[in-house]
Image 1 (cartoon, rainbow, N blue to C red):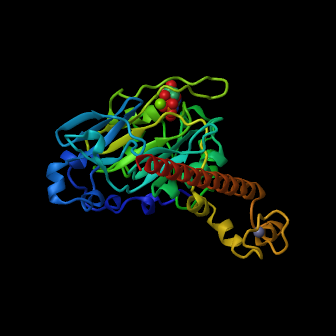
Image 2: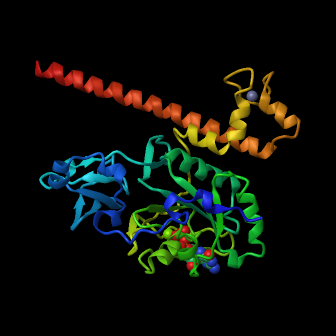
Image 3: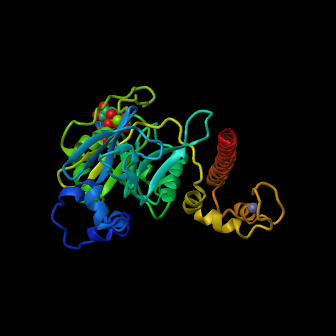
Amino acid sequence: MPRDYSVFLPSTARGETPKPPVSGLQSLGWQPFFAQQISIDELTQTPPVRVTEVHRNGLRVLGDRLDSMIPPRADATVGDWLLFDHQLPSASRLLERKSLIKRRAAGHDRSVQLIAANIDTVFIVTSCNLDFNLARLERYVALGFDAGVTPVILLTKPDLCDDPASYVTQAETISTDVAVLTLNARSDEPKTKLAPWCRPGQTVAFLGSSGVGKSTLTNALSGTNSAATQAIREDDAKGRHTTSHRQLHLLPDGCAVLDTPGVRELQLTEAEAGVAEVFSDLDALSLECRFNDCTHISEPGCAVQAALERGDIDAARLARWRKLVAEDQHNTATLAQRRSRDKAFGKMIKQAKKHKSK
Ligand SMILES: Nc1nc2c(ncn2[C@@H]2O[C@H](COP(=O)(O)OP(=O)(O)O)[C@@H](O)[C@H]2O)c(=O)[nH]1
Ligand SMILES: [Mg+2]
Ligand SMILES: [Zn+2]
């Protein structure tokens, strides 16, 4: 039976009268959450601008009749709001975020990489083919929950698949709080099927592997070809990276859409709450384990193992949960170590400078 998706929608989409398309700042995604952070004086002296493009050599910021490039800064990412300082653009104040999508940076450096800020809905995109992977979807959903964003799972390429419904059934096991939709990105379906989330003043993002149709979906929503797309390899369904930078596409009806390059490796860091939300049943069980640091492998009094033996939970899903928890804990701990090391180093430099100036 198809699920009733209206419960997942923002209140304005549940049959209330739609507001007319927005203008000015609102069409960039400006919301009361940001407005309440600034005074009228600030608003006139340092107008709000949104980071709409992130390039290696700078950030493009857009505001009400304002379009500028500012130097790159490590603390800002696409979707962020800044109070634009005309005299010294690099000193523009960063506004508090409504949501933040981040991951552990790829490679040996365990630092955090900011993916996008102030996103309302994240469309987690995969295809009805070899790209489909339950563990990866769970990872993305945990990331979305943890970021404070509404995750929605999109299954593309149903037109190239004999049995799209079987993918839907699998994806729906992830969480009862996440809508799952199939849609042909190359048709007119995206505009109608995604309309409930792509409302005026909203910001949505597409995340997923290369080749699943993120740029095609972006183009379908905007009605343009501003996002470059490319065919995938037929043998393993793998895509190639065509989208090289992160960019917010502003739609005429006042929704902002973020297309992202495919992410090869997505590791969670500081996402404990998000993982617990996806696996809320297992998380609740673990509270009943005798030891509070139970790893749920062979400890006596383990409520999770007991549930497994009774056949109440799925062994594969349990294994995926344990793997994600371990990964998140490991990355979070190394990140904390790194931060305290950096702090100690900063202190040492400060003291050395003080000493020198004496
Ligand atoms: N038949 C079909 N092709 C699709 C669909 N979605 C994407 N494609 C094709 O898949 C390829 C990769 O799409 P692209 O948007 O570049 O993927 P991205 O890497 O996620 O941005 C392109 O050739 C698209 O035309 C779909 O739903 N059906
Ligand atoms: Mg792309
Ligand atoms: Zn246990």
